[in-house]
Image (tube, rainbow, N blue to C red; front, side, top):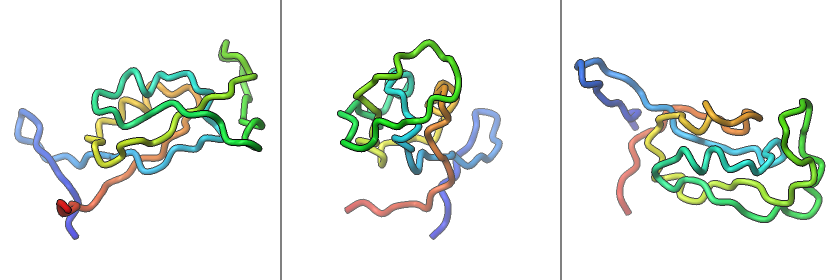
Length: 104
C-alpha cells in the first residue's frame, strides 16, 4: 500500500508522521499531548497495576506519585502533525509514516 502524502500551501510534497505507539511506562500523565491535539487522539486513563515504576530521570516539576497516564484513544484520527511529540517532556510517543487505510 502507498504511504499517505500531502501538499504544503507552496505545493511541496510531505509525508505526515503519525503517532504509532505511546510508552505508558515513560508517561507522567501531564496531559500536554492531550491539550495540543485537536483530533482527540489521546485520553487520560488510570495507570494499570504494576506500572508505578515509570521512568523519572530528571526533575521536571511533576509529582512522581501519579496514577494517571495517557492512552491512545482515537489513533486513526491522527493527522501526523507531531505536535504531541514536540510538547512531551518524556518522549513517550513514536511516530512514522502510515499506509492509506481503506474505510470499513
